[in-house]
Image 1 (cartoon, one colour):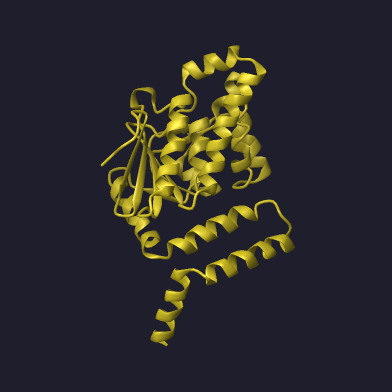
Image 2: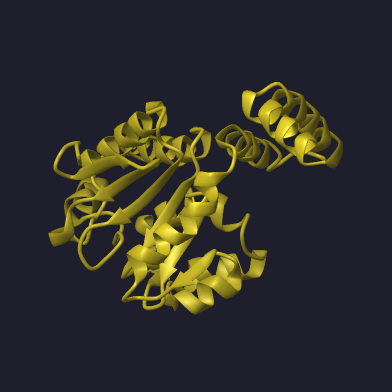
Length: 256
Protein backbone atom coordinates (compact mmCIF):
# COMPACT_ATOMS: atom_id res chain seq x y z
CA UNK A 1 0.00 0.00 0.00
CA UNK A 2 1.30 3.43 -0.95
CA UNK A 3 1.86 5.95 1.81
CA UNK A 4 3.40 9.37 2.23
CA UNK A 5 2.28 12.90 1.54
CA UNK A 6 0.67 13.80 -1.77
CA UNK A 7 3.90 14.93 -3.48
CA UNK A 8 5.87 11.72 -2.85
CA UNK A 9 4.47 8.21 -2.51
CA UNK A 10 6.16 5.20 -0.89
CA UNK A 11 5.13 1.60 -1.39
CA UNK A 12 7.16 -1.31 0.02
CA UNK A 13 6.33 -4.80 -1.24
CA UNK A 14 8.26 -7.93 -2.21
CA UNK A 15 11.57 -6.42 -1.12
CA UNK A 16 11.22 -3.30 -3.28
CA UNK A 17 10.59 0.20 -1.94
CA UNK A 18 8.92 2.12 -4.76
CA UNK A 19 9.18 5.89 -4.33
CA UNK A 20 7.17 7.99 -6.77
CA UNK A 21 7.48 11.73 -7.35
CA UNK A 22 3.82 12.66 -7.52
CA UNK A 23 3.39 16.07 -9.14
CA UNK A 24 2.54 14.94 -12.69
CA UNK A 25 0.74 18.19 -13.50
CA UNK A 26 4.04 20.02 -12.76
CA UNK A 27 6.21 17.41 -14.49
CA UNK A 28 7.30 16.37 -10.96
CA UNK A 29 9.17 19.65 -10.56
CA UNK A 30 11.25 20.08 -7.42
CA UNK A 31 10.12 22.36 -4.62
CA UNK A 32 10.75 22.49 -0.86
CA UNK A 33 7.82 20.21 -0.08
CA UNK A 34 8.79 17.52 -2.58
CA UNK A 35 12.47 17.52 -1.57
CA UNK A 36 11.56 17.21 2.13
CA UNK A 37 9.06 14.45 1.40
CA UNK A 38 11.57 12.58 -0.77
CA UNK A 39 14.20 12.67 1.98
CA UNK A 40 11.61 11.38 4.43
CA UNK A 41 10.55 8.56 2.07
CA UNK A 42 14.17 7.48 1.55
CA UNK A 43 14.76 7.34 5.30
CA UNK A 44 11.59 5.33 5.89
CA UNK A 45 12.49 2.90 3.12
CA UNK A 46 15.96 2.48 4.59
CA UNK A 47 14.48 1.74 8.02
CA UNK A 48 12.16 -0.92 6.59
CA UNK A 49 13.90 -4.22 7.20
CA UNK A 50 12.00 -5.91 4.36
CA UNK A 51 13.30 -3.52 1.70
CA UNK A 52 16.23 -4.64 -0.45
CA UNK A 53 16.26 -1.85 -3.05
CA UNK A 54 14.64 1.46 -3.90
CA UNK A 55 13.09 2.32 -7.26
CA UNK A 56 12.65 6.05 -7.78
CA UNK A 57 10.29 7.11 -10.56
CA UNK A 58 8.02 9.96 -11.58
CA UNK A 59 4.26 9.93 -12.02
CA UNK A 60 2.92 10.91 -15.41
CA UNK A 61 4.93 11.50 -18.57
CA UNK A 62 8.19 12.81 -17.08
CA UNK A 63 10.64 11.78 -14.40
CA UNK A 64 11.41 15.31 -13.16
CA UNK A 65 11.75 18.68 -14.90
CA UNK A 66 13.92 20.38 -12.27
CA UNK A 67 12.97 23.32 -10.05
CA UNK A 68 9.43 24.62 -10.47
CA UNK A 69 8.55 28.22 -11.31
CA UNK A 70 7.75 29.21 -7.73
CA UNK A 71 11.14 27.92 -6.60
CA UNK A 72 12.90 29.87 -9.36
CA UNK A 73 10.99 33.03 -8.46
CA UNK A 74 11.98 32.64 -4.82
CA UNK A 75 15.63 32.10 -5.75
CA UNK A 76 15.72 35.33 -7.74
CA UNK A 77 14.53 37.36 -4.75
CA UNK A 78 16.11 35.45 -1.86
CA UNK A 79 18.92 36.61 0.37
CA UNK A 80 22.30 34.88 0.50
CA UNK A 81 21.31 33.07 3.71
CA UNK A 82 18.01 31.90 2.22
CA UNK A 83 19.72 30.65 -0.92
CA UNK A 84 22.28 28.80 1.20
CA UNK A 85 19.52 27.03 3.13
CA UNK A 86 17.78 26.10 -0.12
CA UNK A 87 20.95 24.76 -1.75
CA UNK A 88 21.91 22.81 1.37
CA UNK A 89 18.52 21.08 1.41
CA UNK A 90 19.22 19.68 -2.08
CA UNK A 91 22.78 18.83 -1.04
CA UNK A 92 21.38 16.78 1.85
CA UNK A 93 19.24 14.81 -0.61
CA UNK A 94 22.22 13.89 -2.80
CA UNK A 95 24.25 12.83 0.23
CA UNK A 96 21.34 10.85 1.67
CA UNK A 97 20.94 8.81 -1.52
CA UNK A 98 24.58 7.72 -1.29
CA UNK A 99 24.59 7.15 2.46
CA UNK A 100 21.57 4.86 2.93
CA UNK A 101 22.17 1.11 2.93
CA UNK A 102 19.80 0.38 0.02
CA UNK A 103 20.74 0.68 -3.64
CA UNK A 104 18.67 3.50 -5.13
CA UNK A 105 17.75 2.99 -8.78
CA UNK A 106 16.26 5.77 -10.89
CA UNK A 107 13.65 4.54 -13.38
CA UNK A 108 13.51 7.37 -15.91
CA UNK A 109 10.70 7.81 -18.40
CA UNK A 110 10.16 11.02 -20.31
CA UNK A 111 12.38 13.96 -19.40
CA UNK A 112 14.92 14.27 -16.60
CA UNK A 113 16.11 17.86 -16.80
CA UNK A 114 18.18 20.27 -14.69
CA UNK A 115 17.81 19.28 -11.02
CA UNK A 116 15.69 16.34 -12.17
CA UNK A 117 18.58 15.08 -14.27
CA UNK A 118 20.85 15.58 -11.28
CA UNK A 119 18.43 13.60 -9.11
CA UNK A 120 18.45 10.69 -11.56
CA UNK A 121 22.23 10.67 -11.96
CA UNK A 122 22.64 11.02 -8.19
CA UNK A 123 21.10 7.57 -7.76
CA UNK A 124 23.28 4.47 -7.60
CA UNK A 125 21.99 3.18 -10.95
CA UNK A 126 19.86 4.60 -13.75
CA UNK A 127 17.41 2.70 -15.94
CA UNK A 128 15.92 4.67 -18.84
CA UNK A 129 13.14 4.10 -21.31
CA UNK A 130 14.33 4.35 -24.90
CA UNK A 131 12.47 7.63 -25.42
CA UNK A 132 13.83 9.27 -22.24
CA UNK A 133 15.69 12.58 -22.47
CA UNK A 134 18.37 14.03 -20.21
CA UNK A 135 19.87 17.49 -19.97
CA UNK A 136 21.14 20.45 -17.98
CA UNK A 137 19.45 23.57 -19.43
CA UNK A 138 20.35 25.73 -16.40
CA UNK A 139 22.92 27.73 -18.37
CA UNK A 140 20.12 29.13 -20.53
CA UNK A 141 18.80 31.10 -17.53
CA UNK A 142 22.21 31.97 -16.10
CA UNK A 143 22.15 29.19 -13.52
CA UNK A 144 24.71 26.43 -12.87
CA UNK A 145 24.09 22.71 -12.14
CA UNK A 146 26.71 23.08 -9.44
CA UNK A 147 26.06 20.20 -7.03
CA UNK A 148 25.24 17.88 -9.90
CA UNK A 149 28.78 18.39 -11.21
CA UNK A 150 30.03 16.25 -8.31
CA UNK A 151 28.10 13.35 -9.85
CA UNK A 152 28.59 14.22 -13.50
CA UNK A 153 32.37 14.59 -13.26
CA UNK A 154 32.63 11.11 -11.74
CA UNK A 155 30.80 9.54 -14.68
CA UNK A 156 32.04 11.28 -17.83
CA UNK A 157 35.21 12.93 -19.07
CA UNK A 158 36.12 16.46 -18.05
CA UNK A 159 35.45 17.80 -21.55
CA UNK A 160 32.11 16.04 -21.89
CA UNK A 161 30.97 17.25 -18.48
CA UNK A 162 31.75 20.84 -19.51
CA UNK A 163 29.92 20.38 -22.82
CA UNK A 164 26.79 19.05 -21.14
CA UNK A 165 26.79 21.91 -18.63
CA UNK A 166 27.69 24.75 -20.97
CA UNK A 167 25.55 23.99 -24.03
CA UNK A 168 22.45 22.87 -22.14
CA UNK A 169 20.97 20.70 -24.89
CA UNK A 170 18.99 17.55 -24.18
CA UNK A 171 20.53 14.19 -25.02
CA UNK A 172 18.83 10.90 -25.82
CA UNK A 173 18.84 7.80 -23.65
CA UNK A 174 21.15 6.16 -26.20
CA UNK A 175 23.67 9.01 -25.85
CA UNK A 176 23.37 8.94 -22.06
CA UNK A 177 24.12 5.22 -22.06
CA UNK A 178 27.09 5.71 -24.39
CA UNK A 179 28.49 8.30 -21.99
CA UNK A 180 28.08 6.01 -18.99
CA UNK A 181 25.24 7.97 -17.37
CA UNK A 182 22.68 5.18 -17.83
CA UNK A 183 23.06 1.52 -16.90
CA UNK A 184 20.37 0.05 -19.14
CA UNK A 185 17.89 1.22 -21.78
CA UNK A 186 14.53 -0.51 -21.50
CA UNK A 187 11.59 -0.84 -23.84
CA UNK A 188 9.03 1.98 -23.60
CA UNK A 189 6.01 -0.30 -23.69
CA UNK A 190 7.33 -2.93 -21.28
CA UNK A 191 9.24 -0.52 -19.05
CA UNK A 192 7.72 -1.50 -15.67
CA UNK A 193 8.16 -5.22 -16.34
CA UNK A 194 11.76 -4.77 -17.47
CA UNK A 195 12.57 -2.67 -14.39
CA UNK A 196 11.26 -5.51 -12.20
CA UNK A 197 13.26 -8.05 -14.20
CA UNK A 198 16.43 -5.98 -13.73
CA UNK A 199 15.86 -6.01 -9.97
CA UNK A 200 15.51 -9.76 -9.56
CA UNK A 201 19.26 -10.57 -9.33
CA UNK A 202 19.66 -7.83 -6.71
CA UNK A 203 16.86 -9.31 -4.63
CA UNK A 204 18.48 -12.76 -4.75
CA UNK A 205 21.95 -11.86 -3.50
CA UNK A 206 23.21 -10.77 -0.09
CA UNK A 207 21.69 -7.49 1.11
CA UNK A 208 24.60 -6.86 3.47
CA UNK A 209 27.15 -7.42 0.68
CA UNK A 210 25.40 -4.90 -1.56
CA UNK A 211 25.19 -2.39 1.28
CA UNK A 212 28.88 -2.75 2.11
CA UNK A 213 29.84 -2.58 -1.58
CA UNK A 214 27.90 0.66 -1.92
CA UNK A 215 29.60 2.14 1.14
CA UNK A 216 33.06 1.18 -0.13
CA UNK A 217 32.40 2.51 -3.63
CA UNK A 218 31.64 5.99 -2.38
CA UNK A 219 34.26 5.97 0.39
CA UNK A 220 36.97 5.61 -2.25
CA UNK A 221 35.73 8.45 -4.48
CA UNK A 222 38.53 10.90 -3.75
CA UNK A 223 41.29 9.04 -1.97
CA UNK A 224 44.65 7.67 -3.04
CA UNK A 225 45.06 4.08 -4.18
CA UNK A 226 46.68 3.16 -0.87
CA UNK A 227 43.86 4.72 1.17
CA UNK A 228 41.26 3.06 -1.08
CA UNK A 229 42.83 -0.34 -0.42
CA UNK A 230 42.87 0.43 3.33
CA UNK A 231 39.14 1.22 3.14
CA UNK A 232 38.75 -2.11 1.38
CA UNK A 233 40.42 -3.90 4.27
CA UNK A 234 37.88 -2.50 6.73
CA UNK A 235 34.91 -3.42 4.53
CA UNK A 236 36.37 -6.85 3.79
CA UNK A 237 36.62 -7.65 7.49
CA UNK A 238 33.12 -6.31 8.16
CA UNK A 239 31.70 -8.43 5.34
CA UNK A 240 33.35 -11.58 6.70
CA UNK A 241 31.56 -11.13 10.01
CA UNK A 242 28.05 -10.83 8.53
CA UNK A 243 25.50 -13.62 8.76
CA UNK A 244 25.07 -13.56 4.97
CA UNK A 245 28.77 -14.23 4.43
CA UNK A 246 28.93 -17.01 7.03
CA UNK A 247 25.96 -18.81 5.49
CA UNK A 248 27.22 -18.21 1.97
CA UNK A 249 30.57 -19.81 2.77
CA UNK A 250 28.81 -22.77 4.37
CA UNK A 251 26.71 -23.30 1.23
CA UNK A 252 29.76 -23.04 -1.00
CA UNK A 253 31.78 -25.52 1.04
CA UNK A 254 28.92 -28.02 1.05
CA UNK A 255 28.79 -27.86 -2.76
CA UNK A 256 32.52 -28.53 -2.92
